Image (cartoon, rainbow, N blue to C red; front, side, top):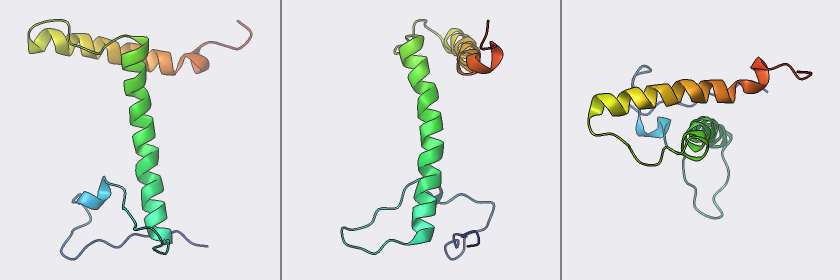
Length: 100
């Protein structure tokens, strides 16, 4: 079985994003399943799961539920530092050998 390709809506160009690029497609109950729609929904869910996991680590592991400082620069610098820590946290199994 070859790869499935989604057809772009009329007038859409390949470089432009449409609403269908970022939203799962809903089906009515009893409606037959289309392989292209299932593939699209699977890809959207896969991206969403990866992004949501990062925000879960940000909120649960590092407690970033509310901003702490006044001012955009301070909050931006704190968020950049937390993002660096998140990258280390998510890569910890690859950085530390199993026998150590």
